[in-house]
Image 1 (spheres, rainbow, N blue to C red):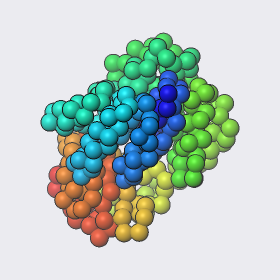
Image 2: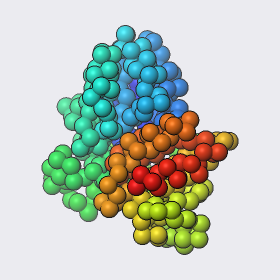
Image 3: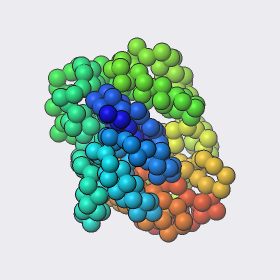
Image 4: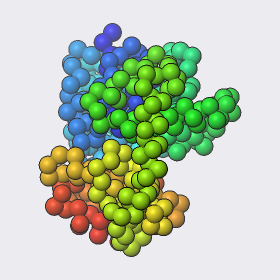
Length: 318
């Protein structure tokens, strides 16, 4: 069988779910981000027999194109769509009408859902991959996460998961590096066994130790959020540091990914009552961009000329 696994490239949950799907199906992994997701799905050929799509929630701006790709793939392949991002009931019905198998639960991370879906076909070590996705997505207190964590040494899981996330933060912008991590994860190697991962994690720790001073100097506060433009690979980390540095419920970090466009990460605390994913999806779409995500962690892509409008609109909502 020709199998393909399309998954998110920017975090460990995406790499983990893609790795687990590939380990179970023997499929080729295609890593992508939200702004090139449709292009990546179009790379899956019509002669594919099996396709797994994981940790990729289509927002309103791309949803029609996403449905078209699901329909195309489902005409000739067994398609499983695994995700934990918000999905409205009308959108859910449209996804199911394409003929794909939908595995969706906002209370579990994508790696956990992938592990649950393919558990009987996965080798020893897969549980650590699933838990790594949960820990780094702040979802290890989920029903599945709690149950699985009780069967392993918690300190070991936290150390291994964090090491992998730090290495990705440090080298994730290098061409082919996320793919190299996936290749090791498919073999069920532990992060401390992966070539260069411990060293990259230490380098990232050193970088993050000085990040707060940079954020305090470069960040700005507007209402109940703080924001800044950064060149760091992990804009999510910067957004989290902004929260602490300015004592606000929401942090927003932006970087120019390509000329004329900004990639934006949003992070929130329990003090923030707004659902960041839904909020930024509406704001970004109104500004000619796209976005989405979870209640406390979200992202978007907006034209550089609209960044000030985005911040102003977001500040009013939070």
